Length: 237
Length: 237
Image 1 (cartoon, chains in turn blue, brown):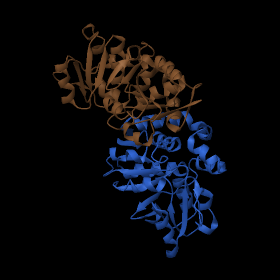
Image 2 (tube, one colour; image 1 turned 45 degrees about the vertical axis):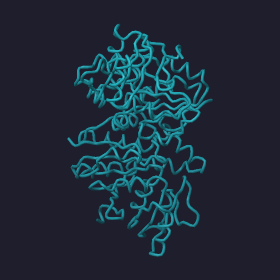
Image 3 (cartoon, each protein chain N blue to C red; image 1 turned 180 degrees about the vertical axis):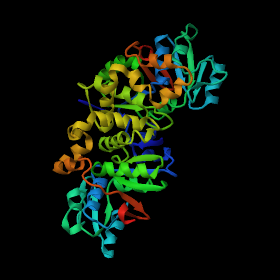
Image 4 (cartoon, helix red, strand yellow; image 1 turned 60 degrees about the vertical axis):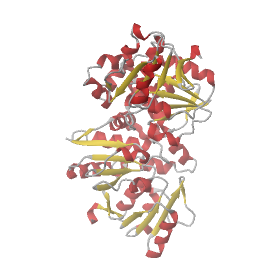
């Protein structure tokens, strides 16, 4: 059996040794759900940036630029942080530079891992199948919200622990708690999450459809992986 | 309504503003359960220390010394970290200097709060009643295990959120998740926890009776509070 652990916030990443492990980065609402949707829509590359200005400069190199801060699209950017933005015909075949509040930070803090993969409910089973093939210990890195624990990323972590229970054992309490929460919530994830802090924050921006979309399991089969500084679909590595 | 938040690990305490709030420190297995049991057994004061050597020196001032590292009693100390140590007749009326792996650190990181109280399942309702009287926002500070999330402290946090649901609303996702876990586990806390990492760690030391004892709700009515550097029963402040 391999081991699976869950880092509930990027602010706890110092407690995890990612070397020789696969890091599974998750920001369900909405960065990694967007990336999954984008690759399913034949996006070429996605390059994450921590800073808005660095991201913006990529437009000169032919990239579309996607920017979100505090749940809202950044003025002047081509895309916001809605999965529907990433599924538009105009995005097909393009490369995207992206910066978000939490998701890009979680990726940058996971670089010690031997492989970084990008996961969401939308490609849960594709990710689980990939991880079975890699045969390494796994750490799910939840993006959280500005360092704090969040419910939707933890639920996804629990879904992955549940999917892999014949392959990887929980190596600490966090994966066990995440799994228990997922099993409690799985029949109606939206109902379980609708009072959560980020869902409430997003509902103010009228993105209920985004939330419902991001909570669908196994809509896509892509496996986005970090390759150098770019995220690409595994089929293209 | 007041607000209740939960800090899942002392390593996340920088994300919480404790000023003008009540901090509820919890280390179910076993530091705060021991303290609760001790005050129920008429211990006078308990003084927490981060370092073994500082704790040891207190013997010269007439204190009993209690020390635990990695779940085991420190050689040469009067008490370990079992609640039964704190309930012995020889401890009645005495003062105790204590150092533990996680609990004393959680206390020292909570000093910005306007009041620090020491909670466990053993005095849950006494603590809830105290908090209703204080009328301040609440942050439950889970001691965790060496910075990591743990299940037993989170379950207690959830129990307190549940007890206070007509008085304080969850201000973030952590209290909501803790409450959901507690409601799932409450009919048999021991069964839910028995596979958790710390319970497994402790079972190696044959302390199953300690664990079962620490998971009993409302056995005692004491309310230990930090008063300067000393923890005392509220009745003695």
